[in-house]
Image (cartoon, rainbow, N blue to C red):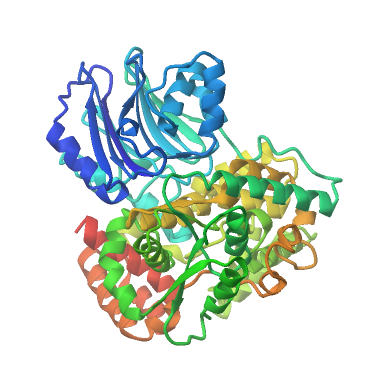
Length: 633
């Protein structure tokens, strides 16, 4: 895992690379790569590549970056891991690539694979990655983000050049990089707690969507291409038995964990005590000669909104004989961390779980671990959220032959009695407007709530903007064109695989873990397992209100029944209670000052949320206000 950076002149634009500036941009990401740094500037000065290294595979100096092909034509800066690099290296050797600079670097495998197969090589990679590859003969740049968006990749064009980086702050170090908020992106942020790709909250800075690449031609033309979609290789398993599907799930999951054990440094496991992390820990412990290191986070005190899971984590750690470490957080830990959290985020990732993710990452790093396995993705693939069951039921009711005008009457009735802040009302409005009931597994504010939050000038500027039309509708159309089963559950998975997972959940893991120089790997998002999950009929994934039914069947006997059968509990933060204490006081002060200074939010509307103690929603706005203060004020 590393930090990457590059700049390329577009077409005939005049640009002289300044080594000192590029190094300053690169070194804003020193936390992503404390083990080494590199810079390469093309002889014709059209392109520059830079790199900060976190050494994981092949720790030798020869595996440093930017790396160059032996022929001198290809140049690479790469962040991530290619887990099947050893297999690919063997295949490339049989094809005549016998001269290697490194003993087992996956970076060099990318260079050789590109020389052999061109851009099709990316289809052979099993891993997480973001990289920039420059062809000095064709004078072209190829930027790639992995299939699921586990690794970030941002870019910006200005002053006749394109810059790209693992983090936005690296681009902002360029004094000529414009720095302003994108109002439309902010409007969408209010729906999703994050900004959907390709926008970011910085106007002019974009992020490459998951499963996509971008090319810069010799003449400066820029083109984007989606090279992978989770539905493209999903061959329906309709007719397969539960036993067959469960066995296939377990086989793919075992392979995914096995691949993610590949490392030249110590690897551990985040362990919450739920099904996903417990399965990770159990499968990872197989064949290990030493105790697996596991890491858990809880909270001091007791809270109505969140119950510690530490006893379940200890139970699982004992089951596999792990060397277990845990830490309990307090409100002080959260408040002390806020300035660094905002700096690490680059743009708001308005999920308070950023806080425990950072601290559990630091716990792992402080205990000698450089890589950890995490459990993200399982809930989306196997219907693990109880709220999804509710959404499926509501979507089913919406297909009943009820005239549209009656649904509209229901909306007006709710408005007349002031019942407009619930999911039920939002779902009814979507039904009236012919939209899918489900937008995302995490929604900050509903569409009808958002205009009231905005200050008058911004409200007028964004009048008529629709997050559904701009973000969800194109995604929905792509889903309907590709899917073999247009079920509500499949749509929910597809939506979250494209928005919530890559831009919220995976970014909170990437940014917080890399903030302490820790690499996190995601077995449940191995693309082979994702394709298998998308091939399973929705009726098999979810029956009689039971979440994760097939996954539970697959891992029963591998982890204790008490872990499998206990109620679902998310990885959370007691924000509600802390909002009644010092955190709430600081939120009120910060938001009031922000509203008065910027006019972006309506203070009168914000006070309504404060008065009804809407802790989670206040956190989303507070995170945004802190970002503004840190990056734009």
